Structure formats: structure tokens, C-alpha cells
Image (cartoon, rainbow, N blue to C red):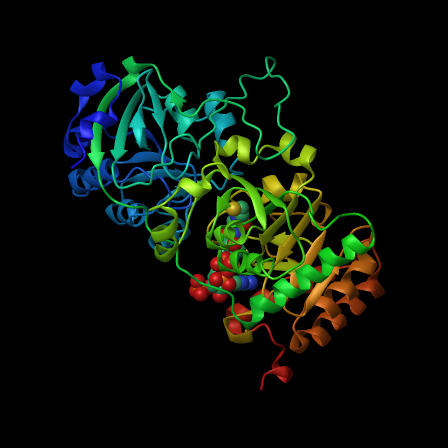
Length: 503
Ligand code: COA
């Protein structure tokens, strides 16, 4: 039986152990919390839940909740239900919280994930009263060893007034796999010395002034698993189309079979598309990404991926059984870093990444909406997709050509919200094909996107719009009074299809 206290290797801190309830009692109305957690991995679990239990019936009690990205363990759901969140940033994926955001009950700042650290460092955001971070251990020299994510933990710890450490004894032994580095203040920065994903920059833990640690709690819960959604027929075809594009790049001499460091976004579609690489000729791959999902571990196990850098590991229950119970084979193949580094424009541009992210919808000129359903309702947030798309060598967006049984076309005349402008989008992929937009003018892009990516049932409608728009002229032809007619039709009739096309 493990002696939990041995995890607090700086012995002078051992007296700080308290219950989650006691730690939660220190949090007062109006405070700002910086929680660990990124795409459900490595999130502080015990204290936030104790806080919800203590405050759910206190009228008007509110805190700001800043994190790395989304939380697991139903924490966002519970925080939202209890109504105790004033402002949430920079990302979430919870249905209940999404509902509250869209009702206007909760303020949400949808932020590029590489930007949060900077606004904390500059003091743009309210000062963090408590950083609450999950850890494997505290070392002899007082470093906090994170668990399955790093996210924003290091910047929160550095800038918080107080730190609460949640030592989680259920998490896998990832000690030695983290690389913590702070880029420092503007004006004092030096180039980040990284030319390949496996380069180490910093320390294996988060340095902390021990005097800031106010309490340490213990906790024994694995991360919430991600749903294990393997490929379906459509995502398999999307993967095949993406591979066709990459093969063409190799034929043209712009890439080799080792490709370039890869980034792949969150969600079932990006994960499924990665599975396509398993049976391909591409090999000796490297990954410089934000989240590692199941597919990445299959690629590592198959010897396809040699090294993967990330800010978090978010895998299914099945994968946890193999990876978490025996992390040894991955220790020299994976590195976890702060999200400011995993998503750093300087490094992304230097390495020349191939970035694969998911769109909700894109338009006939290549603008992409990844966040807002019909232009107003938040889905999850932009996450790191903008950090990567803007700075990568090739920015690829994938999506199924239709949603909700065909009532929604993912290819529209004009996106109802722009996350990634046409200037930052290189290649669009659906189950019908791919459109390589590089070097194409708007009038060349539209027919290509419509023919290669749109669902056949929407192609005629899209071409009609484009042709009519061209009659009006313009560099990027549009009929402004009809640009959002597809979204208004969806709201009014339940489908984007024109009435004569509805079966
Ligand atoms: N309009 C309305 N709803 C749409 C839609 C559209 N154009 N396209 C898809 N949807 C719906 C789907 O029907 C599904 O709904 P459901 O949850 O009720 O079933 C939901 O959106 C998710 O779609 P799914 O096909 O399951 O895709 P996904 O899991 O791959 O998620 C995003 C897609 C875009 C929501 C997700 O990738 C995301 O949040 N991206 C932004 C953040 C990001 O890219 N981060 C990358 C760096 S890690």
C-alpha cells in the first residue's frame, strides 16, 4: 500500500495537507481561480467539486474560472448547474455550460489557447487568487510534477497569489515526460530553442515558491475518458481524401513520406482521420500537437510516429488501460508542455507543421467557422485551431459535408461566423474530396470547393448562388441580402435545402 505522503518529497510541505472541503472554504465570492485541466485531462477534481457543494445555495456567489481548456469529471457541468461561474475561459465542451453560455447566464471568453498565458503574464486578466493544479508529486526541490496535461498550470502557479496542489494517486507515472518552460516577458525574450518536437527546453516540473502553497489535498480518480469513436464510413473516406492530398504533395516534391510534424485537432473527426495514416506508406512521423487522442497511440504502437509533443493526453477508457498502466514504452516518445509552447506560433512556423483541424462549416471562398452554430450559438470554442492554422505550413480543415441528416450543409455561401479567414485556410476536406486552395483567387476557389467538397444535393444550390453573385461582380462575389439565407432558412424550415429540393 502506497504511503501517499511520500508524494510530497519536500518534507516541509507535508504539514499543509488538508481536506478538499477545507481548501474550498478559502475560496471567496468574486475570486478568480486558475484550474489545471486540458481537454478533460489532468484537471483539478477534488477542490472544484467541494466548492460546488459548499456554494451552490449561496445566493450570488460567483467566481471566475480560467483553465487550460475543457475540464472532465463533470466539473464544468456542476459549476454551470450551481450557477457559480461569472466568467469562464478559454475553452469548454460541456453541454450544460454551453447552454448557460448561450442563454447569457455565464460570460465566456473564446480565446486562442496560446493567448491565455500572455494575458495572465501581462496582468490583463484579474489576478488569480488560487491556482488549483493536479499533480503526481512535489519534488525535493519543490517542483510540482503535473499529470496528464500541462495546459496553463505553470503560468497560473507562477502568477497566482496562492496555490493548492491536488495530488492524484490514480494517475499514471508520467514523471520525466513534462517539459516546463516560460518564454518570459516581452522585451526580454530570446528565440525558443526548438527545431524538432523532441527538443527539451525546460524542467520536468513546475517551479513554485513553496511559500505560495496554501494547501495540499489528495485525490484518487482517473481522468474522464474520451468517447472511443473510431472511424465510420465517412471519416474513412475523408481520411483517404486527405491521404490523396498528401500523396500529391510527395509526388510534387514538396514533402517526403516522412511528411512534416503533424498537428491534429480535437474531436471524433480529426481522431478518425488520423487512423487513415495507420495503413499508409507514411512513416517516421513526428507530431507537434495540442492533444494526443487514441489514434496517436495506435500510430506510436505501430511504429509510424517516432515522437509526439503535446499539452495533454485525452484517451478512451480502453486506451487508458494500456497506456496508463504501462507508460514506460512512451516515456521517450512523448513530451507534455505548457499550451503556450505546444501552440507557439514561432515554433509552429519554424517546424513547418501540417495542421489538421475540424470545421463546423466553411464557405465557398474558404472561410471557416469552427465555433458558432448558425452564427450565434457557441459550440466549444476556437481552441488551438487558430494558433495552428495561421502559422502552419499547410492548414487543413476537415468536416463531413452535411450535418443533422442532411438538413445542414457544411458548405455554405458565407460562413455565419469566421474563425479562420480564407487567408489562413489551405486545404478543405470532406468525404467527397479535397479542395487545395493555395494560390487560387476567390473565383477559382468557389467552383473547386463546391465540386470537390459539397454534398451533391447542395451543389446546384451553391453554384446558383455563385453564378448570380458573379453577375454582380467583385473580387469576392456575394449577394449580401442572400448570404445568410441558408442559415435563416434552416432556422425557419429546419433545412438549408431550397423548398423545391426537399423530398
Ligand atoms: N451546424 C450545426 N451543427 C453542426 C454542424 C453545422 N454546420 N456541423 C456539425 N454539427 C454538429 C454535429 O451534428 C454534432 O452535433 P451533436 O453533438 O448534437 O451530435 C456536433 O456538431 C459535433 O460534430 P461531430 O461531427 O461529432 O464533430 P467533432 O466531434 O469532430 O467536433 C467541432 C467538431 C468543430 C465541434 C470540434 O472539432 C471543435 O470544437 N473544434 C474547435 C476547436 C478546435 O478545433 N480545436 C483544435 C485544436 S485541439
